[in-house]
Structure formats: C-alpha cells, structure tokens
Length: 581
Image (tube, rainbow, N blue to C red):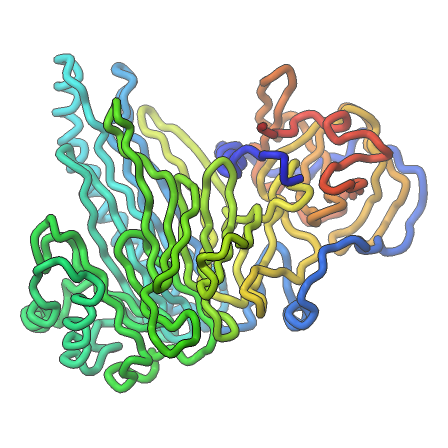
C-alpha cells in the first residue's frame, strides 16, 4: 500500500464544496435480498496490534463516531475557516482575497454556556472588522482596475488569518490570530490574541493571569537575549512600563499549558529589520508570579508551535537542562522568476534537528509520560503526520502516518463576482481526545475520520473500530457486489445481500482494513463529471452525511493493502475511485 499515492486529501474537501440541497431519505434500489436476519458481524482478526492498556482505558468512555461525548470537562473548539475571493470577470482577475476564522464550540452542555456566549460576541466583533477590511480593499481595488486597464501588472491584495488554539481546558481558553496581509506594497504580518476564563466566559486581562508583572518582564528581558542574541532592541520591561498605564490593553499575549507567551511584532521593540520577538516564560520557572488558577497542573499536554520565531524551553532529554525547541519554515528561490516558495520545515530540540519536506504544515509540541514529541501535520504530495521523539530527533527512524486533523465539512458558493469557501476544521488541544482523518488500507478509496488520543508511547491511537467517511465521494458499481445489511452498531439484519451493477453508493462508515458501510443514492444527490475515460461522483446533498439508518456492509479481501472481493480488484468493481501515481 505504501507504493500507492493518493491525491491530496484536500481534494476530498474541494469535492464537497457545493451548495446544500434539500434532504431526502436515501433510496434502497437495485438491492436483492437473499436471506434472513443473522448474527452480529465479527471483527477483523488481522487488526494491527495496539497498546492494550491505552485502548481499554479509552473504551470505557461512551464514544459516538459522529458526536463527541465530553467526559473531561474540557471544551473542544472548531475553527470555521472562510475565504472570500473578490473577482473582476472582465479582466479575469482576482482583486483581493480575505481569509478569516470564526470560533465554534463542539459541546452543548450548560457548563459551557458562558464560553459559548463569549464566542458569539467574538464572532460578531470579527464581522465588524471584516466590514472595515472590505471597505479598505474595495478602495484599493479601484486603483488596481485602473492599472489593469492601462496595461500595468497588478498584484493581488490579501489578508489571511490563521488561528491557533494555544490552550483549551477547564480553566482557560487562549487564542492567537496570526495575519499575513498585503495592501499593495509588500507582505506584512501581525498578531492578535484573546483569552477567556472557561467557567465564566470572561475575557482575561494580562494581570488576571500574571499577578507579578514586574518579575515576569524581568525574566522576559533575560529570555529575549537568549532567544535573539544578535539584535539590539528595547527591553520588554521598558515596553511593559508604558503599556501598564493602559492595563496592557495592546499587549499580545497567550496562556498555554507551558506558561505565558508575549508577542511583539516587527518594529515594536526594535527596527522592522529586527523582526518579531516571541517570548515564553514557563510556569515552572517561577510559579509564584502567576495566578494559581491558571497554572497548568496536568502532566500531559499539547500546544501549537508557530513556525518562524516561537521558542519553547523544556528538558527534552532528561538531563536537567532546558532545551530550545522551535520550528522553522524552509524556503528556496527560483533563480529565473525570483519567486520564493516553501520546501519544508525544520524542527530543532537543543543540539538536534531534522528536516521534513512539505509545502505547508502545522507543528504541535506534545508532552506524554514525561517525554516530548513534535507532531508535524504536513502536506506535500499527500497529507502526513510525522510523530518525532525529541529525545532522538537526529535519528533517521521516524514514525509517519497517512493522517491529518479532520475537516468536518466544506462548502463553496458564488454570488456575482464574489466566491466563498468555507470549511470547519478540527483542532488539537487535548491529548485524550482529538479527531483526525486517517488513510488506512481503505485509503485508496477515502480517508476515515476517528476520535484519537495520544498513547503512552506518544503516538496517536484510537479505540474506535470504525470511523466516519465524510469526504462525500460516491461510487458506481461495475458488477453485482455481495454485501450484508447491518444496523448502525454493525449487527447483521440480512446476510448474503447483493447490490446490483450500476448502483450509486455512498460510503458513510468504514474500518481501516476490511469493510465499508454504504447507502444507495440517486444521481440528483451528486455532482457527476467525466475524466480519464470514466465518471466521478461527489455528494451535493450534504445532509445525507447525517444518515443514521441501516447500511449495506461491503467486505473486502485485503492482501497487504491490495483490496478485492472474491479475487476481483476494486478497480474492476467500482467506478469513481480517485488515485494518482
């Protein structure tokens, strides 16, 4: 299976970016039932070995593949990424693009009502900011159109924000917004932050978390010259002295499981050429300067590491000395066009480092069982997760999976000259529960979305046998397909059933190695297009993804990743399989 390349999983998101249609019950046509009710379907016997203690611990929790059951008291956040493209059809030009991120809460419990209300207010404030951004871009766009009409080259304007959940637990939720923008001159960057008390939903001020700000910034003065040795800038404490008069209103800061981080954009402490400075003071460096409620007390955690200039100081190898842990993007320049593009990411831990080829990625520092790991979710030809043990970072032996954080849904619409792309993204803030899309042996057909946890060995594990299929990819049967009718729990209702040739099927659940649970659909539920001599199918009636009735279970023979039914290869059984390479 490793010698097969899948199209980028982002394609699966694109394929479901269509307008929602009205919901109707999935039809069960072209089915021949040949037997009566039977026994429960047995589980696969060739399943990969797992850490038994970890899995049993998580099996005790009541988990549903579709909706997270919160037993930890921690909030779990979804990011609603929205991209607007403002086009000029006459010149076939995109004048500007705006990417912004709304906050959504997975949980519906009463204990999270104050936080949910704060998120709603945050999203309303975001709408006001967006209105002003659009007004500014509309003004600049008029100048662009004038330049285009006169034959001058035009540069696409943009403002793109990525949001990082630095912490989300029973005590605090901390969010960093990182914006890259260009108003016509050159690319620039800025950061903003907002922090909430989880219980009350109250917006946290800096002094709510750091009760001894004088000692904090004295430590920051020392740290800034450890992390940025060759620059000459204003001391953070000097900046803080003037900021305190306004209750640190303009200070960008976050609180994570490690400690409190302050962010200074280019030009704040020094010249533009000095770049930005990001300084983290850990709780365990001097716990007394922090408000006890917000000092992280658990042994395991995960935090995002923003590539570029965020350094975290932890003892990765157990020698009692803190190591500098950070991630840098790698770039190359085209000698002819002079365009600069990403070629990978480099992870550092003390004196060790390693490079990963990719054109984009996200990094997360994970502490588990006293050890530190870097989770690198990267995208190159395919999406991969590299799980790097920071104690052995120089080792060539590194774990990787066809794995990425889940995308709940994606939509696309166009009104006039404005296009809108929306996707709802999962986040990774809890070592005991996060949602990821995994390309197992059935990955040649689709990714499988499961709930995961970080195991004792630092790798992602799941106690769920099957997961959801949310890609919206459908297939047409090229032959009669034998199957079993099962309920949602997998209990057999009718065995020796057949789906006849020419039926359109939509997979909704599957396990990693041997079966998929499907429903039948109509052409009206799909977008159908031709390519390479065959038809491909993607779901437009997205409400069918919420179907909860009975399924037709198709079971495969699996020969080291090569899938077949009764010796017939899947490519001879189904039309619409998307592969590359």
